[in-house]
Every structure is written in structure tokens, then in C-alpha cells.
Image (tube, rainbow, N blue to C red; front, side):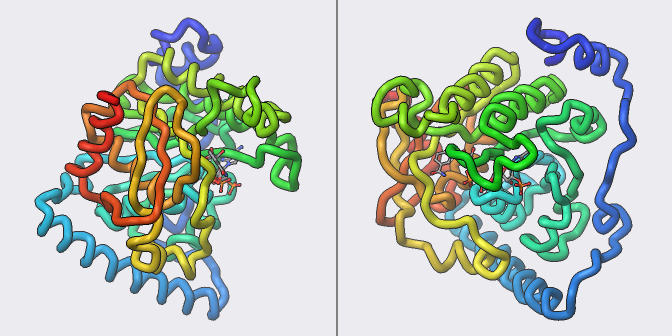
Length: 328
Ligand SMILES: NC(=O)c1ccc[n+]([C@@H]2O[C@H](COP(=O)([O-])OP(=O)(O)OC[C@H]3O[C@@H](n4cnc5c(N)ncnc54)[C@H](OP(=O)(O)O)[C@@H]3O)[C@@H](O)[C@H]2O)c1
């Protein structure tokens, strides 16, 4: 992809052409060596509880997949890179991938967050790398080795907050970070799913112009456009105002059960006409499902959710939803 994109910085194109790793890779020791990170006794108890709940969920999810005839490809065939996996949507994406036995790799500014959120996971299921998308040099090609699919759900607050510390603003995260990530991805990637926002095409119009006072919608649209012109197969998911979460590890593993039946009914649209709210659970599952569905390739969808039963993780139902959006 690198050489196909004329807007790429020269350094990226050269690095990809020669396949040279320019920076020693930080690989989270826990996952490579199976050595636990240090954690307090109480945290360990919480993690053990969380792990048990994840395991129960996996069994439950697998049996319901069997029932529904939507059993997934074995994890070995897919390695999903999740960027922003410590965030509200991101943590649910990772939880869903774990539940569905799909291997994932995370790029996190603070890798220790992975242990806090997901407990002790086998390195075959979950690998964690340290990286900040604002820094090109953090996105070493070796991070993307064997990656088949990508979900990017990075973001920061729309208005100034502590999360902007160290210049982590919408411009740097939603534009520069997304551009850096897309530029660094190998052309072999089968799908890049980017979480953006409803309203990005109308950031000059009320009420969107208020949300866009510091440029968040404009920069998200620039990130979208960069991905669209990258030549990589993409799906853009634009959620409405997010509800449900972010969750701590306590809630993460009970969340999918606890909230079943509430705000799980999904509305999918195109053309940036949908207005409303979206459960982070639904948005996360939309991202995971979009990875495999041919109908979602090179498409942009707005996603909302309302009270009622939803598609859960049934691929067939998601396919119908995405198809209905295309024809509406
Ligand atoms: N909130 C809403 O109502 C709303 C509506 C529509 C769309 N959205 C968008 O939907 C997406 C998900 O939202 P959310 O509320 O679930 O996200 P979130 O909780 O704010 O999580 C953002 C994620 O991005 C990561 N991140 C931030 N800056 C980074 C950087 N420089 N390098 C690497 N990672 C970085 C964060 O990591 P750290 O843990 O290191 O901070 C975190 O994992 C975002 O793009 C958001 O803008 C939100």
C-alpha cells in the first residue's frame, strides 16, 4: 500500500520498500514469555474473577454460535490489530475478539492497561505492543507482521480536557494518528475498519459545528479520506453519540450479558443522515463483524442503536443489516 499512495512521506515508502525495521520493538514481556506483570493481590483476585467470566462467556458464545450456524473461522486464520483497544469501544472490540476466539494484537500507549482490562490472556490470543499513533517511529513494520485485519478506534475528547495533555488533540489523534497508521500498514491487510463519527460531512452546519468547535469532526473526516484513498480495503463505521461504557474490568466481562436486550437493536444508514445514539457494545460488534463481510468492503456506515433485541454476534443478521443500508 505504501508505494501505491502518492501522499505518503518518503521515509515510509522507503522503509516499506526495503522492509527494514528502524526501531527496536517493544514487546510486552508478559505475552512473549508467559510471565505475569506485577499486580497487587486484590487486583489479581479481580483479574481471576474477570478471567473466569471471560471463559464462561466464551463457552456460552461458542455454543450459541453453533446453534445459530455462525461458527467462526478458527483463530489461526485471522490476526486482528486493534488500535485504541484500551478505550470504550476498543475494550469491547477486544472482548468480542477474545470471546470469538479471534487472535488480536494491540497497540497501546500504556500496555499495562491491557492486563487491567483483559486479565491474563494467552499470548496466542492477545499480544500487546507499545505505541503512540502520533509518532511514525512507533509504528515499526514489525508491528504489522502477520496482521490480517485492523480495527482503529482511537480518539480523544472533542473539547479541551486532561486527555489533550501532551498535545493529544483531535488534530493529532484523529488526523495525524490515523494517517500515520494507515501509511504504516502493509498492502496485505484484508480490511481496515475505522471508527469515525456521524456528522463528519456536515461539520460546518449546526448543530455539528458546535461539536466541531475544536475540529474533531473535520479531522475525523480527513482521517477517513486518507484511508479511503489509501487503496486498502476499508470499512468506516460512524457511530452516533456513544452510550454504555467505558467499562472497567469488573464490568467488562459481565457487560455483554448484563446489557443484552437493552439498546441492542441496530440501525445502520449511509449518507450521514442518521442522528442519534449508539451503544458502544453495538459499535464494537459492528467493527468485528465488518471485518469478514464482503458487503462492507469499501463502504461507510452510520450506526445507531435503540432499545430492543439486536443481532448480537450473528454474522448473518449483521450481513442483512449492512445490506439493507446499501439499498436504502
Ligand atoms: N463519545 C462519543 O459520543 C462519540 C461519538 C461518535 C464517535 N466517537 C468516536 O468513537 C471512537 C471510540 O470512542 P470511545 O469513547 O469509545 O473512545 P475512548 O474511550 O476515548 O478511547 C480512545 C482510545 O484511543 C486511544 N488513544 C488516544 N490517543 C492515542 C494515541 N495518541 N496513540 C494511540 N492510542 C491513542 C486511547 O488510549 P489511551 O488509553 O492511551 O488514552 C483509547 O484506547 C473515537 O474515535 C471517538 O471519537 C465518539
